[in-house]
Amino acid sequence: MLNVRRLWPLDSKSYWRIIDSIGKDFRPDIVWACSDALHAILGVRVAKRLGASLVIDLYDNFESFSVTRIPGMTSAFRRAHRCADGITCVSHPLARYVYETSSCKCPVEVIENAVPEGFFYPMDRASCRREMGLPPDGIFIGTAGAISQSRGIETLFKTFEILARERPDVHLILAGTCDKGLRLPKNSRVHYLGILPMNKVPVFLSSLNISVICNRESAFGKYCFPQKFYESVACGLPIVVAQTGVMKELLKDKPDFLFKPEDADNLAAVLRRQIERPFTLPTEVPTWTILAHRLDNFFRTCLKVEKL
Image (tube, rainbow, N blue to C red; front, side, top):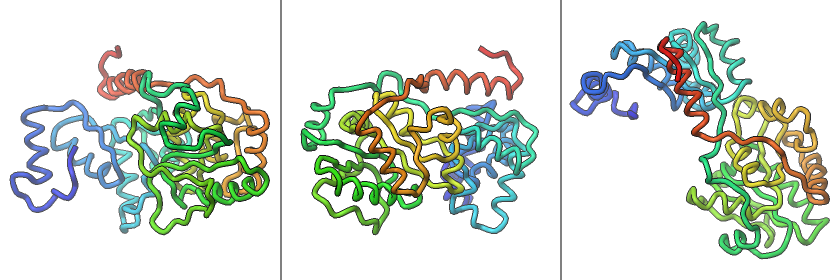
């Protein structure tokens, strides 16, 4: 992993000097270029410099990132796709978008998000609430991750205010990075737990009655795969998910789990149903170990060597 800030100056610790050192000592077969559009563009040059195959990894729609506002960056990014020997994408909608916008000819593999084996599983709700320092009683709706306007989090805030007027037992529980200047609802039943260490995330989720996954119909939301989806399902939680991108496709036969993005009244209606009659998804949750085998076989495909 290299930091692009070391592109200049060209001293012994510069980006390209380290690349040359890796080529000499490690001799990689594949460069797996990820992080953002700039790293994908650099990946083309790095792979040529090392005489390696190139796979570009798109864990999100990088065209929605701020770096692509630089003139020429998006067109260079799409050209990089046409130079790749393979592309890994986080969702099927993103894979289709890549084919449509870049005209790439290489194989594209969809590697969605997953969970660590044995890490997310149903836990005792009462003990989880004690561990998180939360009240013992109430209907807890909440989310963990990016508490951000870009994900439509304010829809959840408005929905909580609607439900809080109807029910004195509803609490809103939040954890994760919070936009600077974002105002949380002023209510004693709103609990913001900050940024949690990874080992506390399953405990946080298991303290909830319902996990809410917000998103917007945006350049990001249409192509991402929400990490909290499988984590919540693995914890045995009832979930409510914004009807965008891959979630719209994955849950097309289960509309009761979906709400219209940025529609607080619709989200309130879906949550009322889950509060009155909670139900969970019987979806099989993939693990990172399973996806690692798929990724290994895809790399072998790109190298044209025998699969395991």
